[in-house]
Amino acid sequence: MTEQLRLENLLPHEPPMLLLSSVVSVDENGSCCEAYVARELPFVDDNGDLPGWVGIELMAQTIGVWGARHAENAGHDVNIGLLLGSRKYESQVGVFPAGSRLIVTAEKVLLDGNMGVFQCAIHLDDKIVANAQVNTYLPGKEELQQILERDF
Image (cartoon, rainbow, N blue to C red; front, side, top):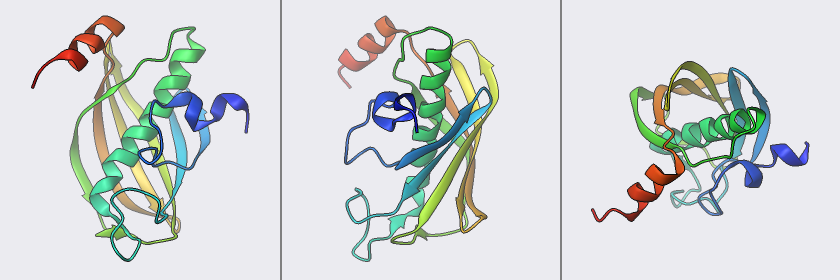
C-alpha cells in the first residue's frame, strides 16, 4: 500500500473512531475499504459484536476515503465532508460478528456542486449484508468553520 492510501492520511478520524482497517482500492467512481470487527472498536457489545446500525458510519468513512483521493487528484486540499443522511439503510444482520472481516464499498451516483450521493454496501463472507444510498455535503473551509463554531 502506498503512503497515500493510508487511512490516517485520508480521514480526519483518530482511534477509536477510525472504524476502517485499510483501503482496498480507490478510483474515480468509488472506493473499497475493509474493517475488522475487533473488541477495541467503540460500540461493540459484550460479545465483541458490532451493532448493524454502525454500518452507516463505515459507509461514511469509505466515502470519506474517496473524497480525500478525489480532492488530492484534482489538486485541492482535503476538507471534512458531512454525512447528511441515507435513504433506505437496510441491514440483513442485527450485528456484525466479532472477528469478522467486512468489505465496505461506496460508488458515486451523483455529484452536484458540494452535494454527493453514493450507493454503499457492506459485504460479509462475499454476501451483501447492508446497503444504503448515502447523501453527503462538502462545505468550504469558511462554511465548515462557521458550522463548527455554532452553538446548538
